[in-house]
Length: 223
Image 1 (cartoon, helix red, strand yellow):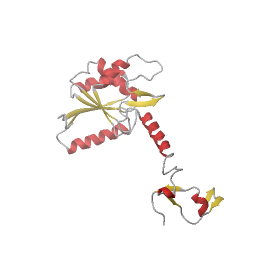
Image 2 (cartoon, rainbow, N blue to C red):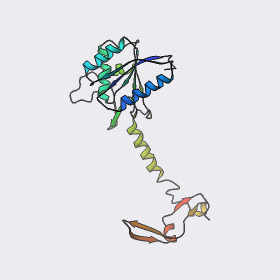
Image 3 (cartoon, rainbow, N blue to C red):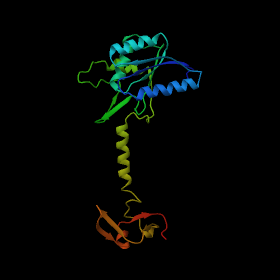
Image 4 (cartoon, rainbow, N blue to C red):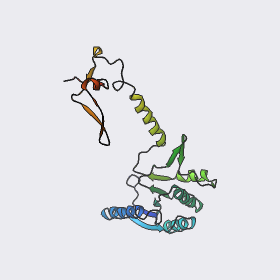
């Protein structure tokens, strides 16, 4: 808000998706506005359900009072419906700014499968409406606020991280057939005995020498 020198905004949210999430978020916003008189919450609309008619009514109520509109919706299909309705109502232009504020969301990405990233503007219903292009254009006029990492393909990132960890497990010092004492490596072994337990039953014990066979080569000196 400060960056763009905006000081008045409206808040539209769903009262049916989550009984706590958006109402609590609204309370936090109201407290923040109360503590900072520079900003004004000019209009608040709670939609009874997220339908075309409800979204249309909410937008019409808001258009007379604000141009900066914060939207709190949980379901990605509802976000898509909201923006398509705004476009159909002629409220998708340089006059309006839509800010989706959704904690624990992943921005414009809603999922990933089979090396394909699914975006919020893509229709996931059994009978697609064929308006993905319109929805994509609509979302290009929005901001998406989230407390999650901005990752365009979270599934791929996790897979890459897993592969990297697996690779490192095969390298020194975790696994190293050439890490000998002659080359400056030390074998770190503790003393005493190791008891392996399963549901309270002792399965086996290992001596200090046997444990060294399960050794971890490290660059640290042994005492």
